[in-house]
Amino acid sequence: MADYLLTESQGPWAGPGADRFAEDAVALRAAGHRVVLFLVENGVVAALPSGPSALHTLLERGGEVWVDGFSLAHRALTADQLLDGARLVEMAEVAERLLEPQVRGVWH
Amino acid sequence: MAQRIPDADVLLALMGAPHTSDMLTSAVRLAQALLERGATVHLWTCGHATGIAKAALGATKPRNLENWAHGYPSTLALAERLLDAFPEQLTWYSCRFCTEERGSVPLADRIKLRPPFKFAEHVAAARTTLFLGVI
Image (tube, rainbow over all chains, first blue to last red; front, side, top):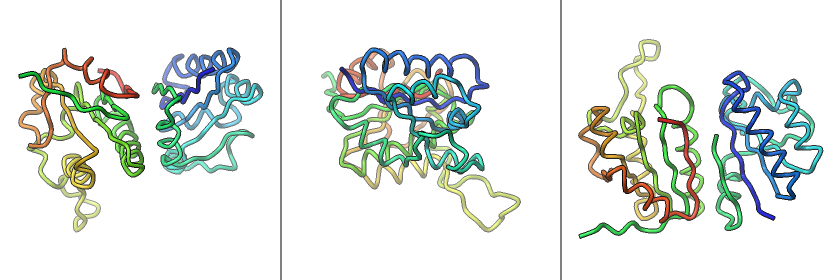
């Protein structure tokens, strides 16, 4: 089992890549890996309840969805608008996770 | 004599143009958070990201007509502040081909120019590599 920190920086309207990336997170979780999907920049809007179904699936299957508080505030969104289970984080927590030796990071 | 690339905890490769998204902001925020935790960080700029640290930018951005009295630091000034704050932990590299091809020369003195075909050696020297953006 590996630990993945997957960062999605693009909004769902940027093309199919963002949805596919979230589906990759689900696939990794289904394979038994520990998965954190970190949403930053325009990627934070995927954490709204109307966002991609893959995020709901990821949370249901034990994955984590982290949302960058700085990016959220820049887009005039608030934590209470996020889907249940999504967690607001700051960059400090992301850095700490990335520095854990077993963690593999990917940025999209 | 071949240059030895020091080991790094994280290599952040900035491959995209800095003005098209929040990529540069995210990269700097992440780099700072890593450095504050004692990590060694290498930044590699490629493509139009090489323009972040070109010397011609000076210390401040052009004046903001809606806030005439306020000074806004240039991306070069931000890069130099980060290098000043973490001189032992942060190394900033720039792809020589992209730097020259995009007209980003000369860069600030502390930015190290590297041939593009050496990039793989930098990846090998880092425990974790993150690519941000595309060329």
